[in-house]
Length: 253
Image 1 (spheres, rainbow, N blue to C red):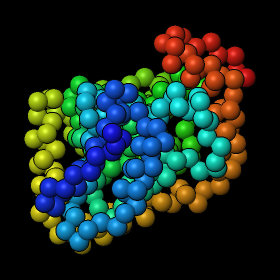
Image 2 (image 1 turned 90 degrees about the vertical axis):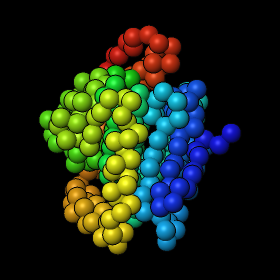
Image 3 (image 1 turned 90 degrees about the horizontal axis):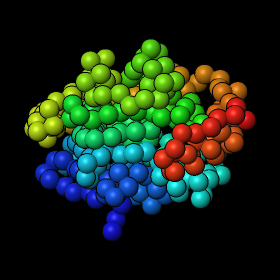
Image 4 (image 1 turned 30 degrees about the horizontal axis):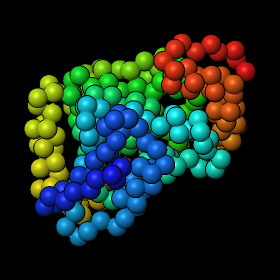
Protein backbone atom coordinates (compact mmCIF):
# COMPACT_ATOMS: atom_id res chain seq x y z
CA UNK A 1 0.00 0.00 0.00
CA UNK A 2 1.31 3.44 -0.92
CA UNK A 3 2.42 5.64 1.96
CA UNK A 4 0.86 8.69 0.27
CA UNK A 5 -2.46 9.02 -1.56
CA UNK A 6 -3.01 11.87 -4.01
CA UNK A 7 -6.53 12.77 -5.13
CA UNK A 8 -7.83 15.50 -7.42
CA UNK A 9 -11.25 17.09 -6.95
CA UNK A 10 -11.73 19.98 -9.35
CA UNK A 11 -9.19 22.67 -8.48
CA UNK A 12 -8.03 20.97 -5.29
CA UNK A 13 -5.32 18.32 -4.88
CA UNK A 14 -5.45 16.39 -1.60
CA UNK A 15 -2.31 14.66 -0.30
CA UNK A 16 -3.04 12.12 2.44
CA UNK A 17 -0.42 10.43 4.64
CA UNK A 18 -1.42 6.76 4.68
CA UNK A 19 0.29 5.00 7.54
CA UNK A 20 -2.34 5.16 10.28
CA UNK A 21 -1.04 2.08 12.11
CA UNK A 22 2.14 4.10 12.83
CA UNK A 23 0.30 7.41 13.41
CA UNK A 24 1.51 8.39 9.91
CA UNK A 25 5.15 8.49 11.03
CA UNK A 26 7.37 9.39 8.09
CA UNK A 27 9.71 6.67 6.86
CA UNK A 28 11.96 6.80 3.82
CA UNK A 29 9.26 5.57 1.46
CA UNK A 30 6.79 8.24 2.60
CA UNK A 31 9.39 11.01 2.37
CA UNK A 32 10.31 9.97 -1.17
CA UNK A 33 6.64 10.00 -2.20
CA UNK A 34 6.02 13.41 -0.60
CA UNK A 35 9.08 14.90 -2.27
CA UNK A 36 7.86 13.67 -5.65
CA UNK A 37 4.40 15.17 -5.08
CA UNK A 38 5.57 18.60 -3.96
CA UNK A 39 8.38 19.06 -6.48
CA UNK A 40 6.13 18.17 -9.42
CA UNK A 41 4.98 21.11 -11.53
CA UNK A 42 1.31 21.84 -10.75
CA UNK A 43 -1.26 21.33 -13.48
CA UNK A 44 -2.71 24.49 -14.99
CA UNK A 45 -6.03 23.91 -13.21
CA UNK A 46 -4.52 23.21 -9.77
CA UNK A 47 -5.32 25.93 -7.24
CA UNK A 48 -4.81 24.48 -3.74
CA UNK A 49 -3.01 21.56 -2.10
CA UNK A 50 -4.57 20.05 1.03
CA UNK A 51 -2.44 17.91 3.38
CA UNK A 52 -4.17 15.40 5.67
CA UNK A 53 -3.36 12.34 7.75
CA UNK A 54 -5.35 9.13 7.59
CA UNK A 55 -6.77 7.83 10.85
CA UNK A 56 -6.79 9.46 14.29
CA UNK A 57 -3.42 11.27 13.97
CA UNK A 58 -2.04 13.81 11.51
CA UNK A 59 1.62 12.78 11.73
CA UNK A 60 3.84 11.58 14.59
CA UNK A 61 7.05 12.82 12.92
CA UNK A 62 9.98 10.76 11.76
CA UNK A 63 9.79 6.97 12.20
CA UNK A 64 12.18 6.60 15.15
CA UNK A 65 12.50 2.83 14.73
CA UNK A 66 13.73 3.30 11.16
CA UNK A 67 16.02 6.15 12.24
CA UNK A 68 17.55 3.89 14.88
CA UNK A 69 18.12 1.10 12.32
CA UNK A 70 19.35 3.39 9.54
CA UNK A 71 20.83 6.65 10.87
CA UNK A 72 21.03 9.44 8.32
CA UNK A 73 24.51 9.83 6.84
CA UNK A 74 23.83 12.63 4.36
CA UNK A 75 24.48 16.31 4.90
CA UNK A 76 20.93 17.28 3.93
CA UNK A 77 18.02 15.81 5.83
CA UNK A 78 15.36 14.09 3.66
CA UNK A 79 12.64 15.62 5.83
CA UNK A 80 14.07 19.10 5.23
CA UNK A 81 13.92 18.49 1.48
CA UNK A 82 10.22 17.67 1.78
CA UNK A 83 9.39 20.70 3.90
CA UNK A 84 11.38 22.96 1.60
CA UNK A 85 9.43 21.53 -1.35
CA UNK A 86 6.13 22.29 0.44
CA UNK A 87 7.28 25.84 1.14
CA UNK A 88 8.54 26.42 -2.40
CA UNK A 89 5.60 24.81 -4.20
CA UNK A 90 3.83 27.67 -6.00
CA UNK A 91 0.37 26.68 -4.74
CA UNK A 92 -1.07 27.62 -1.34
CA UNK A 93 -1.24 24.64 0.99
CA UNK A 94 -3.77 23.87 3.73
CA UNK A 95 -3.00 21.39 6.52
CA UNK A 96 -6.06 19.78 8.12
CA UNK A 97 -4.91 18.44 11.48
CA UNK A 98 -6.50 15.96 13.85
CA UNK A 99 -4.93 14.13 16.75
CA UNK A 100 -1.15 14.44 17.07
CA UNK A 101 1.17 16.60 14.97
CA UNK A 102 4.48 15.90 16.65
CA UNK A 103 8.07 16.85 15.72
CA UNK A 104 8.24 16.47 11.92
CA UNK A 105 4.45 16.32 11.83
CA UNK A 106 4.25 19.69 13.56
CA UNK A 107 6.83 21.14 11.18
CA UNK A 108 5.04 19.74 8.14
CA UNK A 109 1.83 21.47 9.18
CA UNK A 110 3.60 24.75 9.91
CA UNK A 111 5.25 24.73 6.49
CA UNK A 112 1.75 24.99 5.00
CA UNK A 113 0.20 28.43 4.52
CA UNK A 114 -2.94 27.58 6.49
CA UNK A 115 -3.35 25.15 9.39
CA UNK A 116 -6.88 24.23 10.47
CA UNK A 117 -6.99 21.91 13.48
CA UNK A 118 -9.49 20.15 15.66
CA UNK A 119 -9.50 21.68 19.12
CA UNK A 120 -8.47 18.25 20.43
CA UNK A 121 -5.32 18.20 18.26
CA UNK A 122 -1.88 18.62 19.80
CA UNK A 123 1.27 20.12 18.30
CA UNK A 124 4.70 19.43 19.73
CA UNK A 125 8.45 19.26 19.19
CA UNK A 126 9.60 16.64 21.70
CA UNK A 127 13.23 16.61 20.52
CA UNK A 128 14.68 17.85 23.83
CA UNK A 129 12.99 14.92 25.57
CA UNK A 130 14.85 12.37 23.43
CA UNK A 131 18.24 14.08 23.14
CA UNK A 132 17.89 15.60 19.66
CA UNK A 133 17.88 19.19 18.40
CA UNK A 134 16.18 20.79 15.39
CA UNK A 135 18.23 22.07 12.48
CA UNK A 136 18.63 25.72 11.56
CA UNK A 137 16.05 25.29 8.79
CA UNK A 138 13.40 23.80 11.08
CA UNK A 139 13.96 26.32 13.87
CA UNK A 140 13.70 29.17 11.37
CA UNK A 141 10.16 28.09 10.50
CA UNK A 142 9.16 27.98 14.17
CA UNK A 143 10.60 31.45 14.70
CA UNK A 144 8.63 32.75 11.71
CA UNK A 145 5.29 31.48 12.95
CA UNK A 146 5.67 31.34 16.75
CA UNK A 147 8.16 34.13 17.52
CA UNK A 148 10.93 33.72 20.10
CA UNK A 149 8.67 33.21 23.14
CA UNK A 150 6.49 30.55 21.51
CA UNK A 151 9.52 28.85 19.98
CA UNK A 152 11.24 28.57 23.35
CA UNK A 153 8.13 27.03 24.92
CA UNK A 154 7.56 24.58 22.06
CA UNK A 155 11.20 23.52 21.72
CA UNK A 156 12.78 23.74 25.15
CA UNK A 157 9.88 22.28 27.15
CA UNK A 158 9.00 19.75 24.46
CA UNK A 159 5.45 19.10 25.69
CA UNK A 160 2.62 18.92 23.13
CA UNK A 161 0.61 22.14 22.94
CA UNK A 162 -3.17 22.05 22.43
CA UNK A 163 -4.50 23.46 19.18
CA UNK A 164 -6.39 26.32 20.91
CA UNK A 165 -3.08 27.48 22.47
CA UNK A 166 -1.52 27.48 19.00
CA UNK A 167 -4.47 29.34 17.46
CA UNK A 168 -4.63 31.96 20.25
CA UNK A 169 -1.01 32.88 19.50
CA UNK A 170 -1.51 33.00 15.75
CA UNK A 171 0.77 30.02 15.17
CA UNK A 172 -2.00 28.16 13.35
CA UNK A 173 -4.99 29.56 11.52
CA UNK A 174 -7.97 27.94 13.27
CA UNK A 175 -8.82 25.52 16.10
CA UNK A 176 -12.41 24.32 15.92
CA UNK A 177 -14.54 21.53 17.45
CA UNK A 178 -13.61 18.20 15.92
CA UNK A 179 -17.00 17.76 14.24
CA UNK A 180 -16.52 21.11 12.48
CA UNK A 181 -12.97 20.48 11.24
CA UNK A 182 -13.78 19.50 7.67
CA UNK A 183 -16.37 22.26 7.23
CA UNK A 184 -14.01 24.95 8.54
CA UNK A 185 -11.15 23.73 6.35
CA UNK A 186 -13.48 23.68 3.34
CA UNK A 187 -14.32 27.36 3.84
CA UNK A 188 -10.64 28.26 3.44
CA UNK A 189 -10.14 25.83 0.55
CA UNK A 190 -13.17 27.25 -1.28
CA UNK A 191 -12.02 30.84 -0.73
CA UNK A 192 -8.54 30.07 -2.03
CA UNK A 193 -9.97 28.20 -5.02
CA UNK A 194 -12.14 31.20 -5.93
CA UNK A 195 -9.34 33.76 -5.67
CA UNK A 196 -7.17 34.78 -8.63
CA UNK A 197 -4.54 32.02 -9.04
CA UNK A 198 -1.77 34.29 -10.35
CA UNK A 199 -2.32 36.62 -7.39
CA UNK A 200 -2.06 33.74 -4.92
CA UNK A 201 1.12 32.41 -6.49
CA UNK A 202 2.67 35.89 -6.41
CA UNK A 203 1.62 36.40 -2.79
CA UNK A 204 3.04 33.08 -1.65
CA UNK A 205 6.33 33.80 -3.43
CA UNK A 206 6.49 37.28 -1.91
CA UNK A 207 5.97 36.04 1.63
CA UNK A 208 8.44 33.16 1.30
CA UNK A 209 11.12 35.43 -0.18
CA UNK A 210 10.64 38.21 2.37
CA UNK A 211 10.99 35.71 5.23
CA UNK A 212 14.17 34.23 3.77
CA UNK A 213 16.49 36.83 5.28
CA UNK A 214 17.58 34.42 8.04
CA UNK A 215 19.00 32.04 5.44
CA UNK A 216 22.04 34.29 5.02
CA UNK A 217 23.00 34.34 8.70
CA UNK A 218 26.23 32.50 9.51
CA UNK A 219 25.32 29.29 11.33
CA UNK A 220 28.01 26.65 10.79
CA UNK A 221 28.81 26.67 14.52
CA UNK A 222 25.13 26.09 15.33
CA UNK A 223 25.01 23.21 12.85
CA UNK A 224 27.95 21.65 14.72
CA UNK A 225 26.04 21.85 18.01
CA UNK A 226 23.01 20.19 16.41
CA UNK A 227 25.15 17.41 14.92
CA UNK A 228 26.79 16.83 18.31
CA UNK A 229 23.38 16.46 19.97
CA UNK A 230 22.09 14.13 17.26
CA UNK A 231 25.19 11.91 17.44
CA UNK A 232 25.33 11.81 21.24
CA UNK A 233 24.83 8.92 23.63
CA UNK A 234 21.88 10.86 25.02
CA UNK A 235 20.20 10.78 21.60
CA UNK A 236 20.65 7.00 21.38
CA UNK A 237 19.27 6.62 24.90
CA UNK A 238 16.39 9.03 24.28
CA UNK A 239 15.21 7.29 21.12
CA UNK A 240 15.53 3.86 22.72
CA UNK A 241 13.57 5.05 25.76
CA UNK A 242 10.80 6.53 23.62
CA UNK A 243 10.46 3.29 21.63
CA UNK A 244 10.50 1.24 24.86
CA UNK A 245 8.00 3.64 26.51
CA UNK A 246 10.20 4.42 29.52
CA UNK A 247 11.86 7.50 30.99
CA UNK A 248 15.31 8.22 29.50
CA UNK A 249 18.44 8.54 31.63
CA UNK A 250 20.51 11.39 30.18
CA UNK A 251 24.20 11.80 31.03
CA UNK A 252 25.15 14.84 28.97
CA UNK A 253 27.43 12.83 26.69
